[in-house]
Length: 484
Image: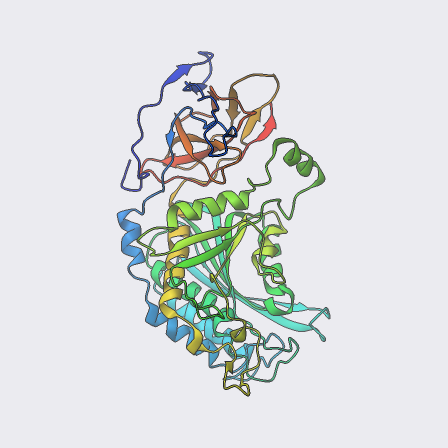
C-alpha cells in the first residue's frame, strides 16, 4: 500500500476456504464477550461485540493530496467573494443585460473566470452556460431565463465516473421578490461559488482520475430551479454520479451570539432516501437501513478523508437532509436518486442572511456583506471539498450490486457483489459495526474476490463492502440489500 493507507496497521486476517470451486473467503470470528452488570446502577449493560478483522481507521491524505491542499489560497477566495458581492444584486429576476449590475453581469464574469482557468487545463476542462426558460411558478412571476455556469474537468482514468460540487450565485434579501435593491449575498452564496473557482484553479493543471463537475447554479433562492435543471440534464444523460455536494452558506464562523467555531463545518446527509420507492422502503424497514443510505455512506467517507490536520477542520456530520425551514441544491440530486449532502457553516448569524442591507436604531448592521465573512474559514472548507473529491476520484468506484444472501437461516454472513472495472483495483474489504453504532468500526480484507462468508451473524450487526486500489485509496461503502 502507498502512503494513503489507513492509520492503523492491517494484521493478517484468519481466513478459511469455502467451496473450492468458488472465490469465496471467510474470516474466523473471536467469540463474543458475555454481558455483565457493568453500570453503576448494577443494571445489565449491552455486551461489547468483538469479532473478525481489525478496528477501522481514518484514511490519511497522500503526499500528492497534501501538496494540492497547500495551494488553496484564502486571498483569492476573498477576491472572488468581494467581486460577486460588487454586482449589487444577483437576484434571479434582476437584469441580465446590464454589464456591471445584476445576475447577467455575474453570470458573464463567472463564465469568463472559469474559461480563463480552463485555458490552462490542456483541454481537460470545458465551460458552458446552461440556459433554460423557467415558466411562471412560485417566486417566478414571468417566464425567466435561468443560466447555470458549469465547468467540467474530465477524468483521465475513469472519466465515466462523475462527482459534482455546486454553489449558487443568485442572491436575495428580506423580500424574496425584491430584485432591484442591493443584495450582496456574500455568505449566501458567493462563499460557495468562490470554493468552486478555487478548486478549478488548483485542479485544472492536474490529472484527476474521475470527472469533476463544478456547477455555479442560479434560481436557488426562487426554488432550486437551476440545480433541478442541471440534475435532470445529467440524469437524462445516464450520468454515473457517485457523489454530489452543495456548498451553501459556508462563509462565516461566527454565530449570532458571538461564539466562533472556525474549524468546524457541518455536513447534512439524509437517512431515508428522498427517492425511495415503496418496495425499497419495505426492504429498508425489514433490515433496519435507516442510517445506511448512500448519502450517509458518502458522509462517512468525507469524515474519514477530510477531517484531519491537513484540512485543519472537523467535519460535523448531521443526520438529516437539511436545516429546519431551509433547503439547498443537493435536494435536486437526491430527488433523482443520487447520493448527496450539503456543507454549511457550524453556527449562523441570521442578521447576515436574507436581510435588507441596513443599520437599525441600535446601530446594528444587517445584510449579507463581505465584512462578515471569514475568508480563512472558507479556505478550510475548500480544503475539505478538495480532500473529498480528490479522494473519491483517486479511489475505486463504490461497489455495485452488493447483496447479503438471505436464502437460508445461518449464523454467519454471506456477501456477494459485482466485479469492479477500475484498472488499478486491488481488492475489497468488508466493514461491519454494531447496529447501535453510527459509523463502521471493524474492517476485514477479503482480497480480490466478489464473494465472501464472514463468521458473524448478519442478524446482530450491519455489514458493508468497499473497494481499494494498489495505493491504498478506499471507496465509499456500499450497503447490501437482501438477495440470493
